[in-house]
Image (cartoon, rainbow, N blue to C red; front, top):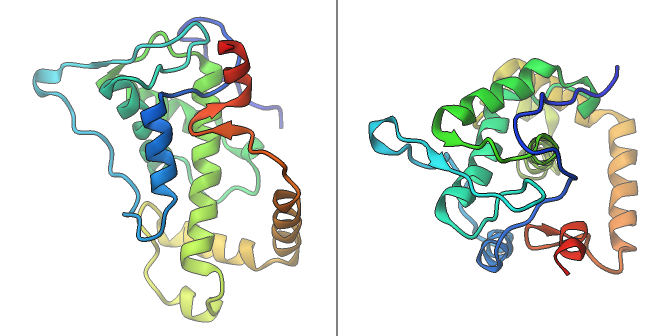
Length: 205
């Protein structure tokens, strides 16, 4: 299946993710022990007013204001809500799932300046992070038989959860996880700095 490209709704720009230094600090802080649960999303403005998402020349939210940071958070929240985890790869996620996330965001955000490349990349990363966190928090080291009879985690229905339990029990998944751990241990430097990709940082320099 060919990879779906979200319809253009702003400036045509290259990919990358960037935020402010404060945003990067919050990202780092969120990785510390005893962190809170997943965000439920920003509170809507009164009177149906939309939050304006300011962007840079790459079509990425600046991240230096409350509304831009809220937009980033909302992408993750709505990805967890509307993009099922029951796909083996991102290439199998249907176009309508991306469109659903975008349509929900457009109800509360004026995000015309955000590039489709940024949007798609952010959804993809949120989807992968969600699955990774589900496996790490709810599955890893626990008996699958017990998990099958337990309630599913937030944002996941029972049918999807049963599929995910089967999927993560496969030897192919376990082998891929081991390879990822080895590859990550060989990294000499991260490809991001807070919420800024190295590509975006090079552009800024």
